[in-house]
Length: 67
Image (cartoon, rainbow, N blue to C red):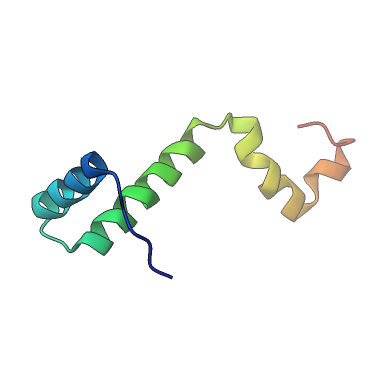
């Protein structure tokens, strides 16, 4: 489950973030990854973001698959 960061710049960045946030290294990595994933989702177009919701409630089929 563990991984080893071999890049010195990445190690420094994670340690700096952990210090700034007052958290451990694992928490700093977790927060950074979660924030990046959220950012990526927010960069998706509105159409792409609502497709899963449309599929859940069946809207994709009701209008011929066009949003």
